[in-house]
Length: 286
Image (cartoon, rainbow, N blue to C red; front, side):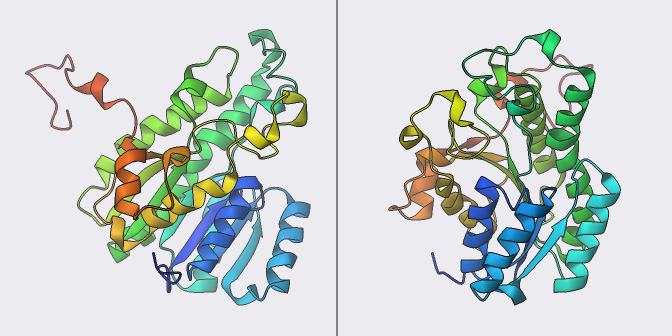
């Protein structure tokens, strides 16, 4: 894939100053895109933006401190991005809160329901589930006006979604996965694709704290997320929508289409939706 495959495109990355986010921002810049980096961590955002400026990327980046759980913040961030770069083509919903908001040792000592306060539940749901909705709702009119757009939602493995003692993180990611599948159908035929990318397992980011007990060398590198996401953002993937890619299964040594044949599957749970109970037979979207 050409290093300039995204030349002329503008991308928004939420959680852009974090582990996976930083990797994606740099990969998008290297592919020729201009990037709005959105993050709630003001200190981390400032430090990352300064590093990008030092590397000569000041003209290609916009750093915005914001909270994806606030719909007004989301709308304002999209407006600022369009004002700065003139257009928006790509939205990567990456921002998320992990189980560490309950306890950092949640891997070695599973979380119980009585530990999840309503405030924690609502906060995680607001960031991990509502945030992507707010961002996509704000960006969608720009995509529709152009007849071209990319929405990429970062979810998690099905194992993690269904794992015991992994709420509210798992259920919120399951909701995002299901919504992604439905949104892909809503935008079908309008030049806008909606896909999901997951690391495929525990990833070497701050979301997996040192007290987890994992051998860090055995964790998935966040850099594994970049090749499939760059491909999905490119025109080569114009016909790919409603899909999920497991980054750990993507072989960057292969041509993207060959790598996708191994790592790509439908998003959501389409097998469970093939025989709905519906008045008069089947719904049109069945």
